[in-house]
Image 1 (tube, one colour):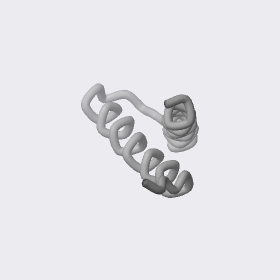
Image 2 (cartoon, rainbow, N blue to C red; image 1 turned 180 degrees about the vertical axis):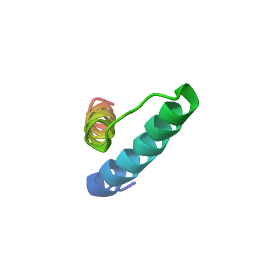
Image 3 (cartoon, one colour; image 1 turned 135 degrees about the vertical axis):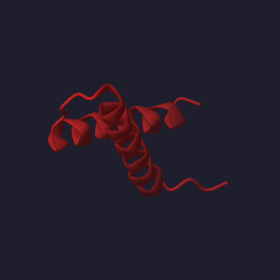
Image 4 (cartoon, one colour; image 1 turned 30 degrees about the horizontal axis):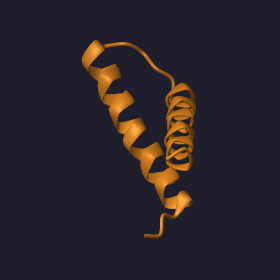
Length: 54
């Protein structure tokens, strides 16, 4: 099975951004776009690291 890391990375960033943005709305906290993007990228890197350690 072929896993394309760029696709996994981009999809993971998108999903993490949606989750973090929704969490910010529910908790009514102000979050800057840059912080959400940075957190999403860190989460996506963790997911790729997890794939390599399998």
